[in-house]
Image 1 (tube, rainbow, N blue to C red):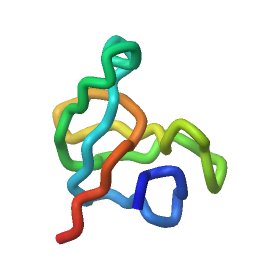
Image 2 (cartoon, rainbow, N blue to C red; image 1 turned 60 degrees about the vertical axis):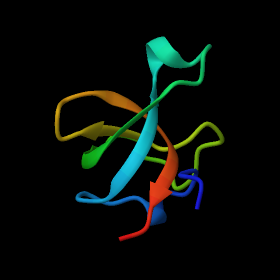
Image 3 (cartoon, rainbow, N blue to C red; image 1 turned 120 degrees about the vertical axis):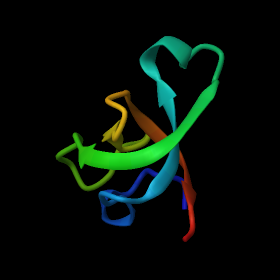
Length: 65
């Protein structure tokens, strides 16, 4: 799962996101999803989420529990 489908992302899920400031470098930030910010069912660059620590970015990697 690559984080492009909204149905695969839900609060409490451990993910890696790319922050807006890190889009050029591709640096990933790991955290737990707090809120889903993308309304559409899919997004080619990843579903936008807010992590529990407040950081916002697009999901690149989903870690299975």
